[in-house]
Length: 475
Ligand code: ADP
Image (cartoon, rainbow, N blue to C red):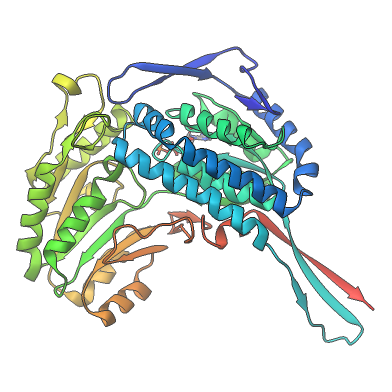
């Protein structure tokens, strides 16, 4: 763990093992921290806040630029570590490291663009001045599916704003978190500004982070159930809260879309990170007039996706995070099959040969999906593409919006009017229009409803870590 500028063991002396999800092999161990370690980390972050928050934006920017450069220099090592610890194909790991580094560069720039306002008053002898100041100590809890970029997406803006932090990474991917911290240490981050508590048992750490009065803000990325629970605890202490949670993205193919292009997009998007992404499409709505070529193309594409170790050439999907994840996917597919869906590709656990010790599920296509099936409303987080054919163009937005989640949605159409209407009517935070990658460090990422609160990245990203202060000046 990293406390006040030092790598330390847990107070208890306990450790936990980290495994490769493709092989089950132990690849490392980390200190198993708890409540006392978290309190010590908060104390360090709190003590460092005074000096860090009063550095100039230019000084903070310089450290973030240095961290960006180091992350780019180390990208191959970081990508290898990510594939080893998280399982995604090496190409995807390289892409994620580059995306992660983008947040450091973007917020190195944004650090210098935090400004205030000079406001007019109705009183002739009064002036108003508003300034932005860092909120204070930030508690950050991050997931395993994007084990480097989900850290930089929080650390970049928090540090740019002048906040100090205590980070708790996911128990499945602490080695990636350690490597990110090494980058910051080598970039010259002062002691106490960033602190990390690793643990195999997150609840006590979460309890301290959401109840210690020295923590001003909670930022969380993970499941909706845990996010709601933590946001509630944080709100009870009036901590500021940003939570980026689950999703159930619709993917709408309109009758005027190019069905082959749309199917290629769906295949590329659905199997990213083995489907373990909150913006992964979970309902593919295809108009009946284009369903045949769409399904034909998608079937061929899914059949070609190879599961395996992320280090092997030609592998398109890696393992899932653990056995529970495989069981959840299997349950949804079995439920759909039992209720009448067809499964033209995949539809089974991969458990023999090279797959025996990993957590694998076959890349799968399901057709004939109906609203009574679990997969039509529960997040899958696995390599399964569920297709629903629709008839009424006027009703498809309503179908797509029929979820409490509101993170990402995708639309394929060649009609500009349809595109604009769908963009405005879909109740989701991120809409891809003929685009399967509507994300960037420069763009706001976040959801509505059960998908969360707040935005990360873009200009909005740094606002989440800033307070507005008003000065009224009588002259
Ligand atoms: P997933 O289902 O994607 O693993 P989780 O919400 O369980 O999502 O995990 C996301 C992050 O939340 C991880 O860092 C995990 O350790 C953490 N987490 C899970 N349960 C708790 C909890 N009770 N308190 C604090 N953090 C938690």
